[in-house]
Amino acid sequence: MGEHRIQKVNKEVKQLISSYISQNLASQFSVIISINVVIVSRDLRTAKIFVSFLNKDLNLKPKEENQHIEILQKHAAEIQFYISKRLRMKFNPKLTFFLDDSVQQQMSVQNLLDSL
Image (cartoon, rainbow, N blue to C red):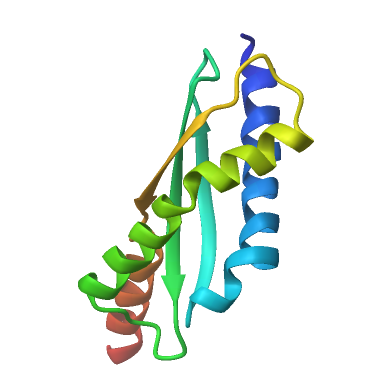
């Protein structure tokens, strides 16, 4: 599948996941969920979803982050079904959620720079 098509699918899947979470799962989280990157495989069978979590203190314990990832993974089949009803593709990708800690790393660097 062409690179342009894959990028378009990544964007659509990201948008649909965000929509589903905000409409159906937001009450299960005490944090803001950010879908940072979606990588759908070239054969459209799998998708890696990189998410980050932000609370008002801008820091979460690793245990809390893992719990949030588990909640998302538990609802992965529902999200896949939601995507399949709204996005016409040959295959519906199997979703796997991963923690993207780049936002926390950026905040740490910014805090270090601010303290100088």
